[in-house]
Image 1 (cartoon, protein in one colour):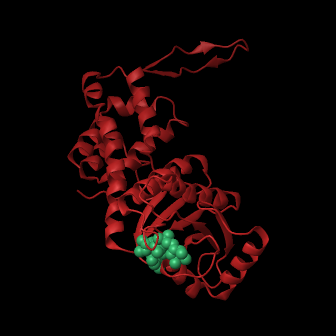
Image 2: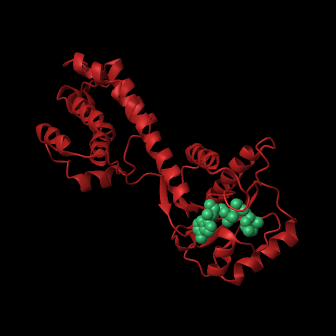
Image 3: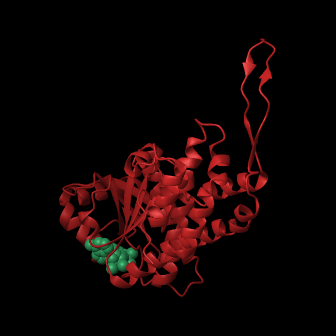
Length: 309
Ligand code: AR6
């Protein structure tokens, strides 16, 4: 199965975080913001002495950092404009709130990023090196913390998890794809609904004369199943971010419904998402479109294709 997503807020990358071109990269630092090995060492040698100078100034101003706290410096010579330094927990067996502390690293880094207008940010796998936090638990903690925080910080457009080692990379890929798969399964629950409800997804009210004597056109009233479906599409995030871009990319704006059904037959997940986005988003401008798409079996065809993927 190949799942291709673009425009997702969470992206998994394999490589060296110092090469990232996000607005900010995050450093797995220590409480005194001193130089060190691992990702900390790599960031300081690529970014130059300015980062260490700013770190020293911060420590002399506020003292040592608590575990989970985050502060920001410039990015020095790095492509990223800023470095957010956060202190991960040292793994002590799991009974000393290490998981919550690791969560705080991500929460506080994203909070700081959002406060400073940062739109894209890259994280290393904090604490999974020298600090020996188990990699699978760290990955789950990082992934779900970031996912939840992104709901809050809507101005952050992209979070990249930059995995240096193959093991971490595979863990994150698995988390991302099973998360998406769960969303698809929720949508697949609607197959029986679309199969059994032919032609009664949407009814139109009669045009009415308003108090001002103008005639007001009819508006659609949707079957509950259809509105539940649309809610699930929204809730699961099964939408492409940029609606207008999606129209341009997929050239579906002017296609008629039978052409769209043809496209669905050939499409991958990314394209299915675009088509669904097209119908869900266009509703704002074109009354009754969901009903039309349901009647013309567009949603049903999308669900059949999702089942195959
Ligand atoms: N890019 C991305 N990830 C990297 C890079 C890189 N260039 N280099 C290493 N990693 P660690 P910690 C990964 O030890 O466990 C420091 O000395 C690495 O494979 O850097 O939070 C500090 O000063 C691992 O998965 O950080 C602290 O004293 C992850 O980054 C202490 O280590 C984190 O490993 C912090 O320990």
